[in-house]
Figure 1 (cartoon, rainbow, N blue to C red):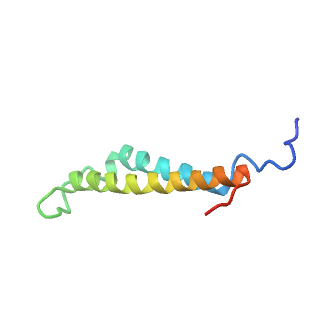
Figure 2: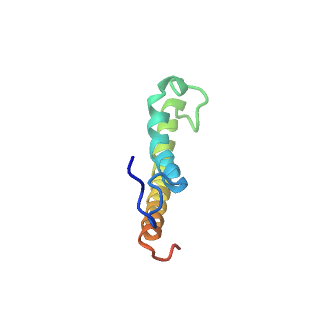
Length: 84
């Protein structure tokens, strides 16, 4: 089994696991239809089915931004740059 060259960080890092979770969470939430296929509780007259999905649009945007920032930090760290 070939060994990893010295000085290279491992491919699977905690940051990359968090990135993957941020990107997979919206898919899991939307594919699990049974969790939101109902009308109650309504929010300002909008059935739960609709506002739950619209809420996930905002949550997905935030999670994608977090994943992108973590990816940038991970790439800088792998190249030996400063991580800020």
